[in-house]
Image 1 (cartoon, rainbow, N blue to C red):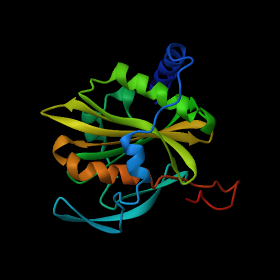
Image 2: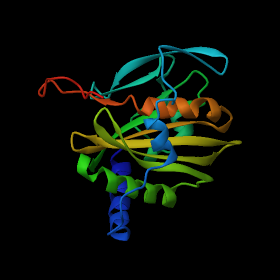
Image 3: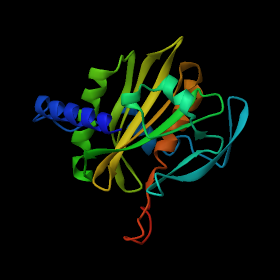
Image 4: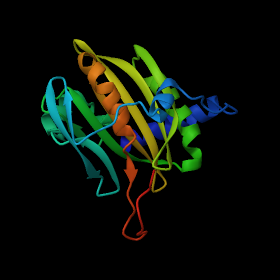
Length: 219
């Protein structure tokens, strides 16, 4: 965790030097999809890949955030984590479906971030991904609003053993730090789960702390 945060910080500093004076990010097709009234809506019970999947809002990271997830998602076991994630890049929380083919990770990093810096941070994350991942396709990137808070995102494909992985990585500011959330699934399940992942992203809430009180962000 600490090593990964240091690496992210170093890459962000490099990205900032390279991208000084860069303009804001344009809206992407995914941004327009998110704002479209005809886009997929999550329901408590959905039919996906011929199976009924129950969804529910789930608090995570010691009740700092909540997001709608399938009820069947559980924390990945240590042995599976060791096989799928190199130690220096291991997120502290990884949830997975019963097959292990669909994964969702959550990482509140040590990198400082405010809402005002989100657009620049998104550009920096794009730089990092292009320089650290073996990308086979890049689908979309941009910034959208979720429950009144700006969220940056990137969609791309990476190679994996005997398949490829669809990835949706999104990020926002949480308590002055960068929260990075990453969804991935095998290419074979992408057609079904890509719109679901996009819609799950739009259910991310930053929950009020006990000290702050009050209501969570409203749409």
